[in-house]
Image 1 (cartoon, one colour):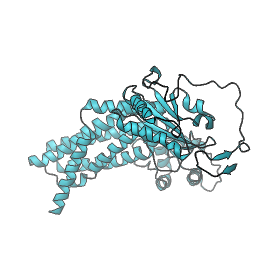
Image 2 (cartoon, rainbow over the protein chains, first blue to last red):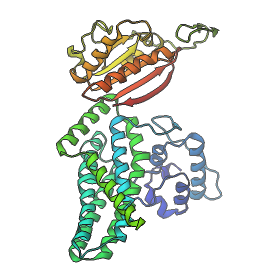
Image 3 (cartoon, chains in turn brown, orange):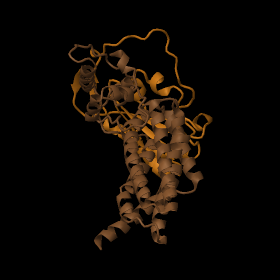
Image 4 (cartoon, chains in turn brown, orange):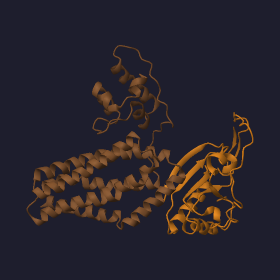
Length: 264
Length: 157
């Protein structure tokens, strides 16, 4: 069993596809992950299951690895005890979660953007460019940059979970690039495809960060580091010269616009 | 534990028979790195508050919390106060504000006892935070009368 605990999750799912369903049941969505090099033991630890749930999930997985055999289930060594309570974020991390709320509101509008896709008129092209500006200026330059340039620097860059986050950011940037290239070609299908892919990616990415990565980071940052992060985030926001409020207004405007269209 | 009813802040409790503790070996070094510490006596802009992680601790906490020095005081600057008995607490409000705005502290951790009157110290810190121009993360820790940690949360920034 120890050998499997030290294997990458993608490798395990490829070899034993049933494991994916078990992880799904516990809200551990490793299957869509692009990297999948997290070790099984780290996945169990980082999702902070309580002891009973950990034993249940490990027993079920062991039965898949060794059908018909009785296997002693090793307990995953944890740095901290599992706690079952509502997620409470530190102030700097809470700021990132609040930025996610604005990003998710824009992502929720993507189906409407696609429904109204128009590449020949100035107004239609502007709608696409406004969407791209939101992604590039707010979701990426304002939000992801704070993660990459500040928050992630407090942790080992070789951690699998961070590799996954960097990979997600890169993929998001590729989709945006592809949207602009498709706009040049006036290729509506490709624009829709990449907007949709961006939305799916971001929803999954934000869920991973809000529920798994951020709580784990909060537990591992010292009070001093939390204070530093808060100051560094504030300095980064001041340096960039615009605020969340600007993009919140942008999302409000688009929500109103699509709501009015619906009413007509 | 024998109990006598009354105000939770001054209720008599006796837990001398309750503790079953291991004695730590060797001399335990103090982690205090400044003087004075009483809120009326401190200057909020003293060098040891500049950019520091500051503890604002209710007087009783250090007596209840066995590992106070090791777990909370290490690498921190401190001030102590009693929100129930101290007078002229508007001075405290101004001093906490000065920590945020003038001393540019990094964080503020408010350590209070579980008794209701102690919440006044956290309220004071939050009031000062609202009135200050510069925001700083504030954490609070609620300590039980037998030294147990009952709650540990980030309050605001």
